[in-house]
Amino acid sequence: MQPLPPLYNSVQGQMRVVGLMSGSGSNLVKILEFEKQLEQERGNSPYKISVIFSDTYDSNAAKIGKDFDLPVVIRDLKGYYAKRGKPRTDMKVREEFDMETVKALEHYDISVAAYTGYMSIATKPLIDAYLGINVHPADLSIFDKDGKRKYTGDHAVRDAILSGEKTIASTIHIIEEEVDYGKILMISKPIKVKLPRIFKPKKRLSKKLEKQNQGLLKKNGDWIIFPRTLLYLAEGRYTGDFLNIYFDGKPIPEGIKLK
Image (cartoon, rainbow, N blue to C red; front, side, top):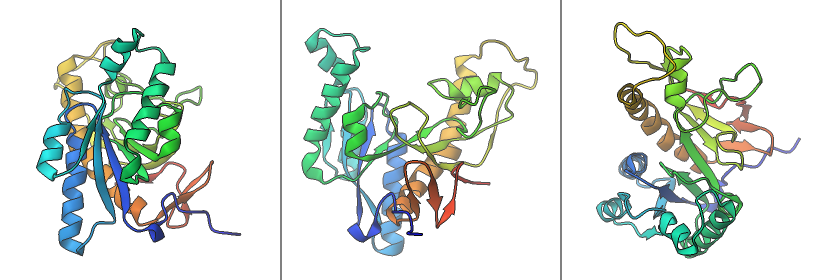
């Protein structure tokens, strides 16, 4: 049987990446710091963030670009919709925006898109242009009784805590058209949920507690697995097809699970 092709073929040389962001860009900063660390330790990093893209002028993209001497492309999605007089729910407009974004990034010769806090739903033009990887603040290998991923969406940390989970984890997955349903590449080690000594599960969780636990998860989950996944990807260690993902030739239906 022929070996499955790598998700990125390291024979192509250094893997060129666009960092997509909408806000603080803390995940992107950690990826860039890891890239510098690899350069110092190895003399060269297998991956390179070649350009930063932001869909909002309110993000830290310009500052990060200045700090790391990188080109920055900013296209404000909110303004794009306003100019056309369309609601943000109009996905046809989003497709047009993504198509123009791909064109704006054309000459950077990008292979991979790292979704580092990119808050817009990616549509087909962007998904088809690059291998996209995203970090999600939940263990996406957990399913509900109906066989669906249990902790998807914007409030995955809150939902996990209210469901009684004692630990939370981050997941790196491939961007596919169904949001939060892409194939899993890596899951962080479990992080213990931090709650007051006396806590009774309710239908609601304070924003303070949600933010506190999400911050712990970002520091001990996202910032560790995102750079590492990019490294393994650039080294050609992930292989796969439309259905299955392998790491070093072994199937990983639930990704690499760190312990």
